[in-house]
Image 1 (cartoon, rainbow, N blue to C red):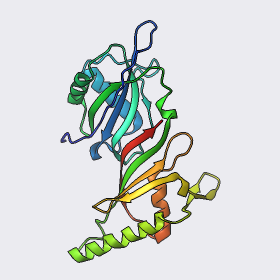
Image 2 (tube, rainbow, N blue to C red; image 1 turned 30 degrees about the vertical axis):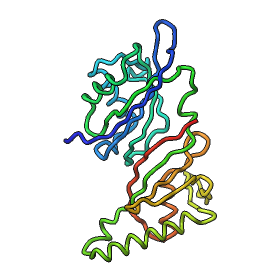
Image 3 (cartoon, rainbow, N blue to C red; image 1 turned 90 degrees about the vertical axis):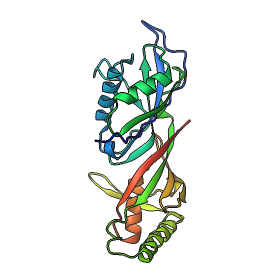
Image 4 (tube, rainbow, N blue to C red; image 1 turned 180 degrees about the vertical axis):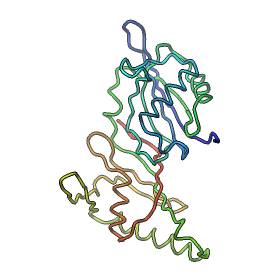
Length: 245
């Protein structure tokens, strides 16, 4: 399998935590390509644990699992790719971040790649409690609709769905059906859509509320779109960035 993954790591410098030994808080921004899009959060932790071990990095292990003690900013939904995932971890030694990125990348499997790493103050609040938004790219999948179609027909199909999406997202209210085990309710998610814009390839860059206080997923937005046009439209999602205070 080719190593065509994308993982980014960002870490900001801190003074560390004193105790039995100094610990250094590392912030990692990473990405996942299609090769890793169905790898779960638990397996992601195992992959990073194996990679840091193979690279002989002095990471701090969880006393419960024996793996890297990771704090994800906002776990990625299975089936999505990303170029902007974030987690915090601790090292027991102050390792040069450029060296760390280079050596750990050598050991990561296809689907993951570390781009950068920085240390952050140990006194910062947990990053997962500070998340307030996330930016995504939603791309409609026209594979079936384009079969046996001319170039002009394909352009017309794209234009049709782009117009429908513009009308859908521009509504003063956007309702979705939220299902639970014992009931269904209609929710207006308009206030949780911060912004959207169409890219040159007609994909949509959209910023949504995310985090512990308010959270809406691209899947919920697209479920509402399918109801709006009375048609299920296949799509792909890439998360570009997580916003936190």
